[in-house]
Image 1 (cartoon, rainbow over the protein chains, first blue to last red):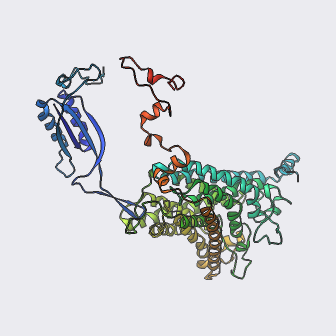
Image 2: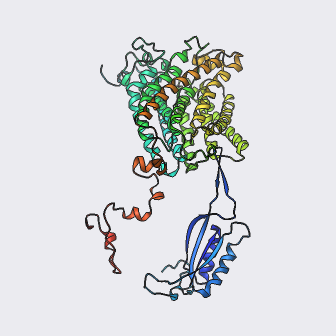
Image 3: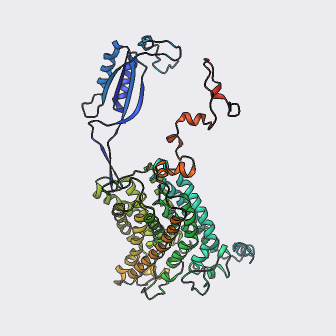
Length: 127
Length: 490
């Protein structure tokens, strides 16, 4: 099991989410974060004073998948998050020890299984 | 003394059918204009709150309401009598301080009791309401500069002194029939002109702000180790915009209302001049900020409109329409460069010392340049030959300058003394930790934007001091979450 953690532009998220869902990976979490990298600071001009904003808003995307699926997830993220400009973000892959589905108490890799698209409720079916 | 409102007489006349037919209309206009000006409190509140950080967003609401209320009672009790009363008091001439109309009880009829407003037959209660609204505006101007660090108690004490003494005496001199207005002094060649209060309201408020700022010091972090000012951005430019547009709206009670009557129809002229002054101010600030920092600074454009309005306030009843955009435009330039210049040494988060102070001085001086002879004659104050551009004479300009210097000196001295006493006794400034935490939670025990500071889970359970029982490990166990405080274990 691996956790894929990606720091991406906000606008990259929606196509990534759609593609992952299509491929049967509905389970993911995002967080609004601020960070710095090689992208330059934004200078704010406010009433004659300047303010350099070094931290840029990014989206942190996390999803835990079976090791065999990591490449597929990585491809999807790279395909949509890469614009070729500085500030596209980074992607990390971390080992994961265990997984538990809280509703049932199931443990291990089966809780991560890729799902059929009917099963995951595309088109507003949220049951 | 009967202790009834003077309108009792008007009511009798109305019943007898002897009430002059102009009285109701003029009274209505003055009351409506007063209410317009009272709405400006919302403008000041939104402007200040928008320029504050989120942790200080709520305090402005309580402050505006508290100040307005204290000022109302003080101005009613003594302020109005000092500002507009006709009689000498304790041997002091009524050109220095008025005395008639304490608690709105006065001797003689309305025109005799408050002679400078005697040209209008609107009832004295209407005039009181209108003049109080001005006092409240002037007081509101003081506080914008002191955002995010002043102790709440300072508002209360200064509001009493300001509404009872400082503003009434200062405004009496400038437009309450006092010695600056009549020019009854060897210092001045003629009387000072200030139609609606560039000096009497705006400069006086800004001067109080300056006195407070010098004793208060900058907000933490405003100046870097190199001594250069740093931006502390306010949290909402949309609120700033809303505030400015409310102020703009209120100004159409402020200036046109100062005609105090509808019968000579001048209120429309004054409204047009006011509009053009505001427009000039925005355009001036827009140009200045584009030149200075290559961007259109939102707050500066907002300040530009205020500066244009402040500057056109004194001349609005004295100049022809063509002067409006010029006066406003120059005020717009002044405010942008003024804010940047003042910001180098003094932390004025809202720019009141520039928008109301520098622009107020400019507007007052502008009368000395642009006043039209016909309007000087009509208002019956100052040189009837008009300003420099009409008469070629510096008389009016000198009178305006003397007026500005005297009003500034008086208000600065009184305000500095008041704030100094507050600083020595109660203290003027919150502690560094309190400033860091924000005035909302420190002074008021609550936040202006609670969800910004308190996690949603805390707000939902919110049982302070009551330990919540750990959830039972049963699948349907929701007892802890639904337990009321009374049922929770002690």
